[in-house]
Length: 304
Figure (cartoon, one colour):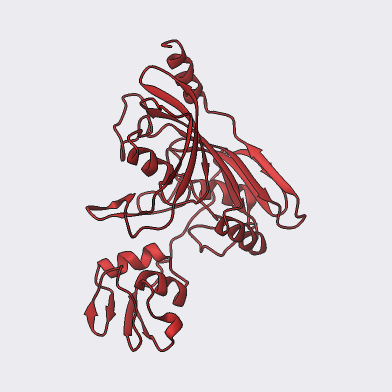
C-alpha cells in the first residue's frame, strides 16, 4: 500500500466532506474510490476511522492508504462495433445490450474498450489509465446506445469539461412500469450509495445533485414509453430516479423486477450532442432504437 499524509492547514480546505476533499487533493483516484477506502478503514483522521460524511477541520492530520495499480494486460480484440460518428478527435459508437464498457474484475475481455483498441490502434486518450483508454463517460452494461470516446487527451479534457458543466445533450428513451397522470416532469433528488447495500445507488440526503427531466411519449396498459433528458450524469441516475417515483424501468433487475426474456433494463441512450473539441462546431448523433425495444413497443401498442 502507498501511504499519503495530508494536513488541513488552510481554512478553504476545512468544512468539506472528506471524500470530496480527497478527490481534490489526490485526483489520481475518484471520489467513489475514496468512499470505498473510507468504508474499508484505509483513511484515518487524527488516527481514527471516519465516515465519508465527515467534514474536515483545521488541524486535521489525514493518512490515506492507496493500493498500487495492478498492471493488467488489456488486449485489442476484433469485435464488430457500430460506429455512428468518427473524426480525428472522437468516436461515437452504438453500444449493444450486454456489452461492458471497460475491463473490470470478471470482464477483462469482450468489452467495448477491447474492441476500440483494435479499431483505433494507439489513438485513444490515456487520461483514465490503461483499463479505460478513451472512456470519458459510461453507460450501463444492459443500456444500449450512443457512447462518446476520445482519441486524444486534448479532446478528453475538452469533453470532460463539457460534461462537468452539463452542456452535453443526452437524451434517453425507456419503457417503464406503470402510467402517469402528468405528461412531463422533473426529478431533482440527490443520488449516492445506498447505505443498506453499497453495490446499489439510491436517493439519499447527502448524495450528489441529480436532475432528470422526463416526457411521457406513449402510455399502454401498465407501461409507459418515456423520454429522459439528463441535466446531470450520476451513476444509474435514470434507473434510480424512476424507481424512486414508483416507475422502475422495465426489466431492471437491480431497482425493479427482472422480466423473463429481457436482459436487464429497457433503456436506450438515443441522442448525444456535443461541441467538437477542435472545430468548435456542434455535433449531434442519434442511435436507432434496438430491435428488441421496437418489438416491445409494437407488442404494447396492440394492447391499447
